[in-house]
Length: 200
Image (cartoon, helix red, strand yellow):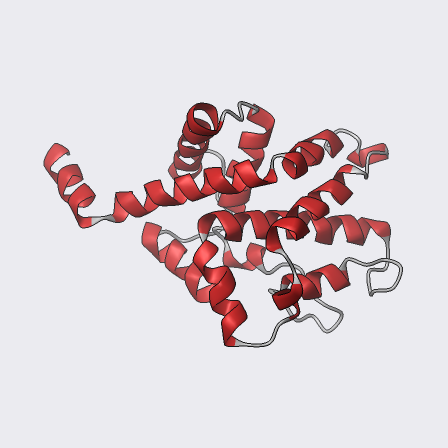
């Protein structure tokens, strides 16, 4: 998994510290997301689109992909383990705030992987025993965003409807990310690079 993320980072040849909104990569993600979501998917919600752009930019930093850690400070990359970590009743989550934090990450993580690296999901499942072998990625992502949307009081009230929309539109968002991945792959194709050199 980390190898795929590093190759994604190497593809763009940059330092991958947290990418500010002014960075051209953030702009590229924004253009591609807005293009595909507006024209091909019909999900013309700027709040959802901007959130997904921010997830892409955030996950350019590998550490952000694996920021959820267990009690032993081991980064979790298994969705099944993350689901256990999010449980405030029978699991180790010390509070409902921790549940929200982990569930939000599960939604982001599963949407990102299912959209940008769908081939990695089964690749890693076939190579070793993992709890996520028993987890439906799409269902886990939708459910996690739905749970986050139910945190609708106090400081979370403003963002709760966004996560409700992300849950309801999870599959179209994954499809949109897959279209973005196709564009990014095409931009790296030798023919595209030759045309860019000729035009520039």
